[in-house]
Image 1 (tube, rainbow, N blue to C red):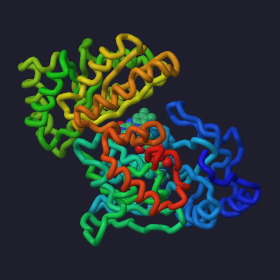
Image 2 (spheres, rainbow, N blue to C red):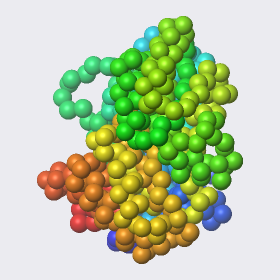
Image 3 (cartoon, rainbow, N blue to C red):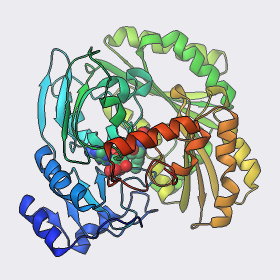
Image 4 (cartoon, rainbow, N blue to C red):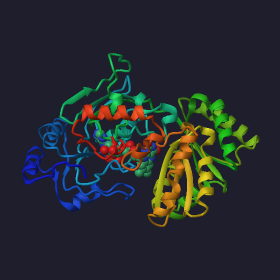
Length: 467
Ligand SMILES: Cc1cc2nc3c(=O)[nH]c(=O)nc-3n(C[C@H](O)[C@H](O)[C@H](O)COP(=O)(O)OP(=O)(O)OC[C@H]3O[C@@H](n4cnc5c(N)ncnc54)[C@H](O)[C@@H]3O)c2cc1C
């Protein structure tokens, strides 16, 4: 534990005066906020603060935490997968759960402005009624907050089509460690007046400021959405199918995801989800979204015919109705959940040149020689992002020593990134040098010192120990 102050009765009195009934100290209520979604990291915070406005966040930080040297852990939906969302020791948890106001939506430009605590799925439902969609979608949508999504620069299932949050987020309001409210909440697509400061906070994992509001560019709701679930016998065929798909579907391709046969087995065993096609080694979930159902149907049909006649795809099924689309997407979205029932999971989220994406899974299986309960691969092929998950019955330090640093060295050797979309949090921060130069990491440390000189915001996260 770094030498931060400990919360006293006097501190509590202050927090209770600023947040009446919203400064929580009941250990039962704190339990779920102290533990991460994977149940792999547990903090021992004794105080959970639930502000409703940016002014309240500012008061908490300015008048208090910064001045009193109290460490703070910003928390959204607590679905993060790298231990960044929960305290390590007794940091105060600052939750955005009550910051749920939608401030405005402009249906001409598609720009939504809302508070950071809005749940991603609630925003999607709000927009659906207004003929728009969120530019991002992920399996944790029922719990994660838009502020948490921005803080982690979440990727998800629509990145292939709509790009990353670095492009779709137009503005942010951020409360800095000393309580200053930084208003960068622009709703403009173009604004080259000086440095684009909001970009610094996208992916900063709560270490540079607390995001309190977001403005984001939302696409029109596509008039026709179709999902195909396809099977391939080799990963090479899966990649060739991707190339064919890009060539033949072009602008209507909106997702190209994959899972291997071991993932399918876990979905069957732990969630009773059944395979809609015959058993194959690899499965593809691909989606088209367009504005003309007949045109999209024709394009998809020609693509599927070409993929089957050239023997790239051995089996497939297509869904056009909502319920079947959801059922096919569940096979991709619920793998993380299936893994939690399978034992303790060591999770890796790497970017690689797409042709090497699955080689890491194969090499890891060879390297571990049956020591793990399972080694599975799935992810976002379209973005070159592999999720490699290795399960054991329980935490197993010997297994971990066999996995790391092997996995990071392998990734660096193939010029990949050791964190494609989950961030570094607590668990991965010391592996940053596998993907970033020491100059880049040193500059990150200087930025942190500039914005948060006392280091009170999410200490022990993102930056390596020596920073
Ligand atoms: C089933 C499942 C599927 C997932 N799929 C994906 C996926 O496809 N793609 C992907 O990228 N991730 C995925 N994730 C990971 C996770 O959902 C995302 O990282 C998500 O964006 C985290 O949002 P959250 O609100 O839960 O943030 P939290 O988990 O609460 O916090 C995550 C980090 O952001 C910081 N933070 C949170 N809110 C704020 C704020 N307002 N201001 C400053 N810092 C803040 C926290 O301190 C922490 O460091 C998945 C997780 C699960 C459980």
